Image: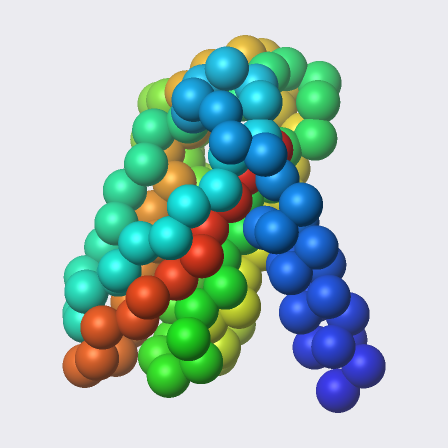
Amino acid sequence: MFRLAGVILVLVTLVFSLGQADAGTGEPKRWKRKVPKNSDVVYKIKYVANQDAEFAVIGEGNTDVDIFVKDETGNNVTSDTGLTDLALVRWRPTKTQVFTIIVRNLNNEDNECYMGHN
């Protein structure tokens, strides 16, 4: 229970404290987007080597939303596959590259999500 509360606090802080900027510049960005039922939303985002990388999702609370991260060669880097629509992934790239971020809605209902990255 306390772990979930901590994750929620981190996600809310991350997403709502991020400023607006173009993806791939190394600047934080946040936005709201519908993730259709039983579908993926895919982003390509450049992250810088040896700096912490983060991507977060906060949904409406009505579906299971997961995050998967792949490097530019298609290798799995990290994921958050919890059973809620609160998801956060963190990693430290060893080289600057464009990562594929997959946000997946696993249920039969659309979910309006806030998303953000550093």
